[in-house]
Length: 400
Image (cartoon, rainbow, N blue to C red; front, side, top):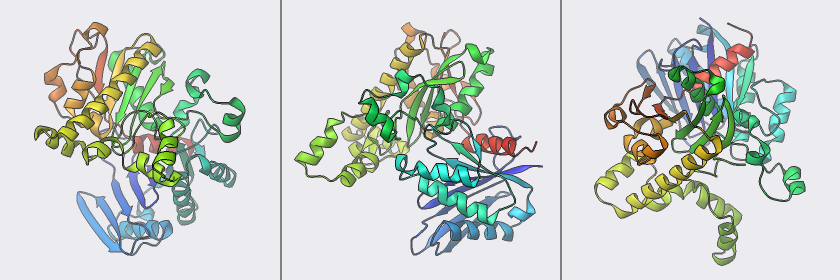
């Protein structure tokens, strides 16, 4: 059984899974784990394997130490790299710029190009690169594959991808709409044609990745034609802690009127805004409990969230001209029936009708939640970015 190790390296954490690329979307990974609190006095490594959970507390000064400790913990419990048939390592890389439209086998040249993109993703790409360099040292004889969040959006037309700012300035500094969550949107959108019984080239759809980070994408014939996130993951929908779309003049106003620095405004918009900035919480389960308790701020945060979501759905309906399906995915999209119902409420005149009973069902598999007479079909499809990355990794490694 050929397996892939999938790594998602953040600034202070590393998520990892060992995945069988031939699994179904609902199949659990063979091994999963999380290295967290890297750089703090005491870090933590959590490993899940064969129905058991193991936790190691230890100082983790950097990514190299974290991944090394994780591999040793796997060895101790019989699921080490040497004990499993790992044929490829897939790495999630947030930003591929305009350079990378497809996953890449990582070479020194490719890694250098990813490093050149750090100015476009200063919070994400350095951590991704750390994970790649560490893993390549620890596993030098296995092919390493980079899968880019932005890759799915290379098909967007210039009218959707470019901003109306001075074109020379934009070109010089790489200012354009890149889009994110691409692996998720691509994975989910590929499942829809079969559910509709249609040729993929003939399907127009809207995919909604709703988690703590959230994005919407319009897909025509399997290719993205527009998306809500922009040059950075800050744009678009209201999110757990991110503002989503705002008047750019707000940035200048906060600097001039409130005396806030660029770093302070960055923190405000990325970490202290969105649902959390209004309600005080960013977990939708807690938000729902506050709404049940008639908390006015929770209801306001939810209302703004839904309003912005509906704006994007409506604009993409016009951009596509005809919509065959709307799909919800990710943590909120898959689990919050109220969000799904409110996002598509009162749209029967556009052929969108949700069945309340179907929508209320919680399940781990793809399912339709629209009524039988809804001309636009509505689905909930669990995303599985790790499985998608594993499949890319094994394919590019030349192993079947």
